Image (tube, rainbow, N blue to C red; front, side, top):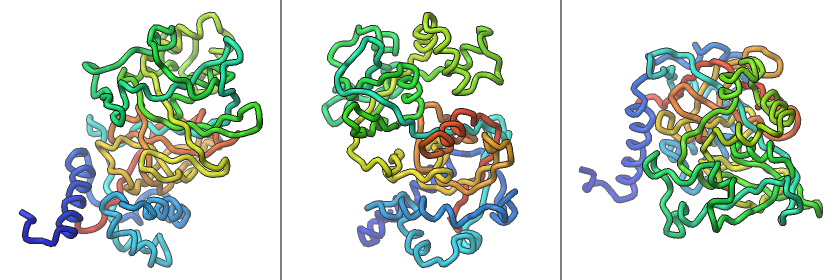
Length: 354
């Protein structure tokens, strides 16, 4: 039906429509339209701080729709807050049950140590994506349980042949949590830094080991944050492997040669902005969409109300009212990510007229 339009314009319209369908049709649980200025904490948030995240995705060769037409407007805007208030409207996201409250967690980029070759039996490997799961090598990524690959237990027991380690990490517990975080930096023995990033997974379902420990009575619900789980695993090495393998999901990595002082790239392909980039379920929130988040700051316990940008995804990030806040790297980022597991609300900002 678009054949009468110039090819370039027709293509842009198709991509824009696809983005709108991704944003709205696949997420039927959307509340009524409201003015962004009415969002709780909007006036207090430093809205200008979101500009670096938006500009990062605008530097892509093909920014996610509808940002191809929004990026020139953003660059020309002297004040991001005023631009958003004039051109966007907000809609609260709802769960499948119709509620507004969902789960907000956090993640960070761990700083680990390791070696390119195995130096001890205590080390744990990070594996490259196997050829069988790599589309660039003729493989097929798992699309569901029916096509799921080997389990974590099978992989870690050595039953799967042909796996290629990228690096050997000194701490097996941190190696497990790196699979949850999705990216990290590894300091090698000669002082060099290696960055590893998510490349794919085995298609098995994700199971939170914190819930396993709570259900077994080993931890209380309040203790089952990342620091508490790590502490328990280190105090019970004889049971740690069995607990870790209750999560059949296994993540594979790729090595990146990026400068140590740059942030990792999310699934959108742009460097993440600490405190402003989030991972979401792209079946409900379009990549590149602005999302206003209302939850709790994990260290101070104060209210956290801030505008963020959907620039990443994650295997455990499932559902409309679900977000994972990227906090950066370092000790404070690790504390925030490890402690953040709070209820919260999300509003997606949509250009007026779409």
